[in-house]
Amino acid sequence: MVIENVFNVLEKKNPFQRLIMESRCVDCSFSDRLGYQWKLSLLEGADKNDDSAWEDKTDWADYTQATGLESVQLVIEAGYLIPEGCTDYS
Image (cartoon, rainbow, N blue to C red; front, side):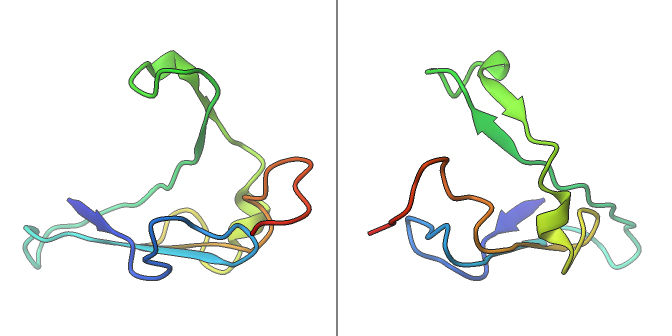
């Protein structure tokens, strides 16, 4: 499965704006039944290749009410991805 970012296709994302993602299966047949479960993890360590350096976020479901976590699309409402203490994102 290939996951494409359909909207906000800039290299950097602005956390003050809504983030919209959509997954598309390039090599699936019409009869394939796909299920979706979006997951958000925060890098807490220095090595992004180390699985133990990632913390699963559990408080973000309220910010995905437009789509939920089991849809082909994912919308994260503006404001959730703002780092703690950040008041300006220039």
